[in-house]
Length: 260
Image 1 (tube, helix red, strand yellow):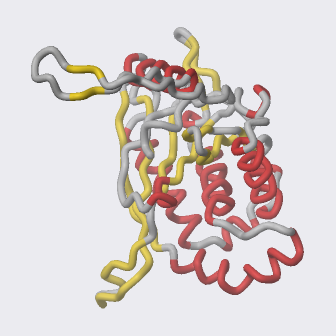
Image 2: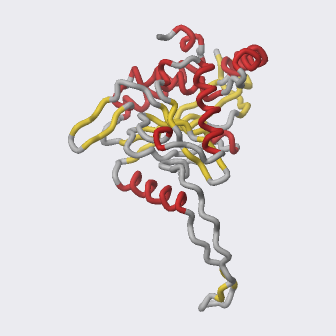
Image 3: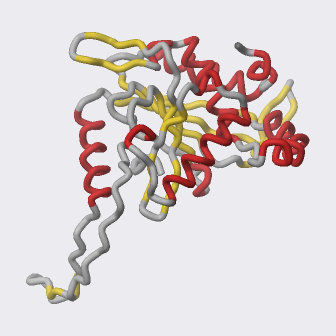
């Protein structure tokens, strides 16, 4: 999942032509030639741009998901009855990312020539899976939304993506991206930034693992998280600090409930 979500646009995938079996000149084995869809061509172009125009680096951390899972379990039924959507993990990570972006504003920025443009708003791209691949629509004003507001907006954007009704305004202008490889069972990845953004947060599969807590080995639901970033703008202190702040918010989600 780490590579295909960047720069996906709301163009419908072209139907693959019926390629005839072609004999390879070297060994005579059958082959089929299929033209890439317009969406896949755009994705390929954007991925190459992301790799060639930045000094990419990825930093990792791990998060104990016990507190978030406990909140979801205790509130899920009431949350769904009241708001009509499930309480998912993405609202927690969106809230945590916004909190971390406020602490480390260079991560919520864009490099334009020799100027670093610091974004003082928080429009978060969230990767959504569709039959034609992944797209990254934008949750606008994520810092001003409640948990329910974030979940409703993600659900709206996901439905629009699957129905191919996303507009350009749904896809452009984001300041930071979150991608969730965990929905495919991915344990670990190095996501590629969404040009021209500085960073992208990758979240992954939750897996029970033994960890040391207060000198004792216990089993906890753990998740690896990754921040890929443009090292021209972000140094180790900021990248490590950003992930540590996200970890703090997820492991102590009450912080997110009282934060402005």
